Image (cartoon, rainbow, N blue to C red; front, side, top):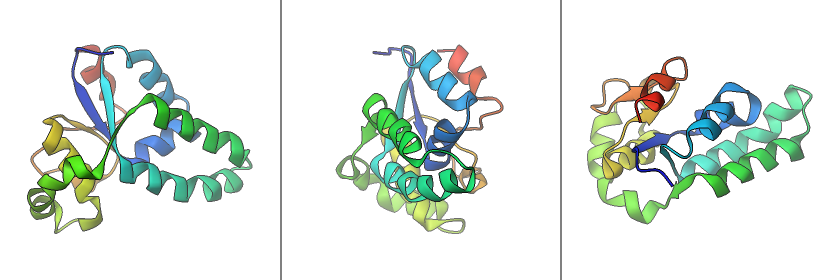
Length: 142
C-alpha cells in the first residue's frame, strides 16, 4: 500500500467514480501512492443515489452498484467508531453549512488529511479541500 499520504473522499466523489471516467481513473492510477479514505456513511449515501442516477442516465444499475462495491473493497473505509471522537469539533466547523456532513469532516480531522470533494460546504472549515479539477496536483506530489 501507500506511504505517500492519505486523502479523504466524500460521497459525491464516489458517485463521480461510478458514473464518470476521470475520478475512477485517478483512483486507480494513484492507489499505490495515496491511501483513499472514505467514511462508512459515504458509501451508504452513494448507494441511495446510484439506482436513480443509473436509471435516469439509461445505465445498468447492477453494473453501477458493482463499481461502487468494488470501490468499497478497494478504498479504506473509516468506521464511525473511529471518527466519532471528532464529532463535536467537526459539527462546530460545519454547523452553518450542512450539519449532516460532519462525519466527512471528522474523518479528515482524525486522519489529519485533505478532502477531495465537490461540495462547497467544506470550504472554509479549516481543512485542505481539493476538487476534481485540481486533485491531480495533490496526487502527483505524493
